[in-house]
Image 1 (cartoon, rainbow, N blue to C red):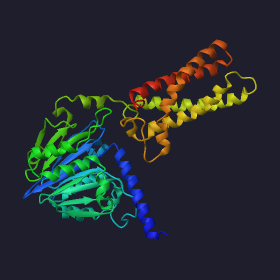
Image 2 (image 1 turned 90 degrees about the horizontal axis):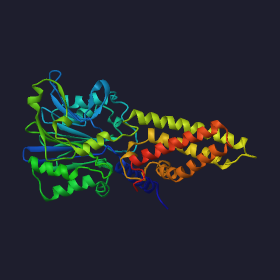
Image 3 (image 1 turned 120 degrees about the horizontal axis):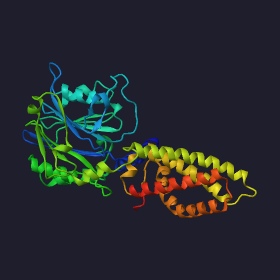
Image 4 (image 1 turned 180 degrees about the vertical axis):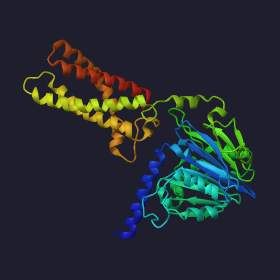
Length: 434
């Protein structure tokens, strides 16, 4: 008979496996590494995102005992500016933020609350000159706030600090590779299921170097480029902790780099630089920029929301008409079918508008490891494609025979028109490319 401990262990393994599956589907994945030989340390960061606004910015020390720093990021956070994805300060402390998953547990209620995560992350670099100081700083706060993130901090000595939602761990290995999982609860076997992590570890087994060329090749090995529209690694940053420089590579193209010297840039005062204009035109990035979804196009979002309203109204209306014309109505089955289809499409419009953006970028049919329902909705475009021709045939007959009232006929026509537009959008999004 199973003991309570065995059952608990089994449940944890199942939960961890589920979390890793979620990470595999996560659009905003990242990876990083550090390499130390002697007194030289380099740190590489790959930000994998669908945003099209990567920036680097420089902030001088704001008071006595603080340090100037450079940050990279692509997510605009209102009055806080851009949220930092990676960065380095004048003392050679560098960090990276990566998406991850950790089972919810009790946090640190007696510590300070993190109310402004962007400011909090920038304050760490402005305040600390070693990973020990970073650890001490973070220990004052309830860092379980970042339940879906993991951080790595590295200093000039080569020491690194791994910040998980409930754990702070300092290490001093010559090399370290990190990706989208919490090391304290993830086995090597499970970690190696992440290709970018596995590639980085394998690359470092054969050779270790701290030249820019070596690190560029390592970053290239770990970058992401998905098949559907060529999206993946938005920005690669290679930070030299001893020289105080950073080399940027844009949209997983490693032939061209732009280098910034932290000291020189801070001497120019606080400033923000858009990264894309610094590099040659990139056709893959242009494809990403022009790729429209309800997440980045207000027009498409409004259309889907309006369609959801139409489908809900039509579903109720045709159900009423089904019972009113039950005895002598022609094409009565269409009323019932429109009721069912209206509810299905209403739910699907909601999923497309408020669900994960991943479905627009991953191959069809999209599978959501967190929801069987969402996974099943991936087959709705195929259902609509099967129905559209018969529906237009019925539409023509309805106007020819005039068995329905005028409002019902035009409502059915409007639905067919919206179905046709949706099929066009589904083709554009690659929902039929299975």
